Length: 166
Image (cartoon, rainbow, N blue to C red):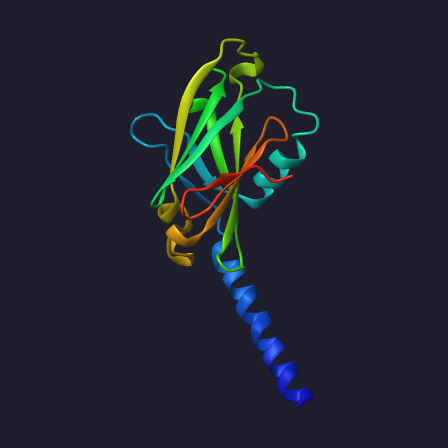
């Protein structure tokens, strides 16, 4: 009995490991044709942006609303100018819970290091199925969205409900 349990646990570990590696790929999805944000998959960049929230000294922004329509995630932000200066980074992994969960962080690259004091409203849009590829059915994934300029996080469920975790 103990041998069967060990084999089962080893198999489960291999499955989890292979799913994690298949999801952890480095790719950039071009901005949408209307000049939308750069969307990329980069675990190291995600970690850097999350760690930098404590000492962030660039142009801050607010995530005012996160909505979801099917596989489309819309993130409303108020902040510095130029939608092309925003980027959305996925950490590259899907948490193997049911339903699966993914983590994104929104960042703003201040052009030439200058702070933009004028506030603008933008809607950043992400095609989740394009981002996750064949690794998951995007319409079933819970998405955690973090603000790269300060501690401000939101969670959006597949049904479109949002929450602010503590």
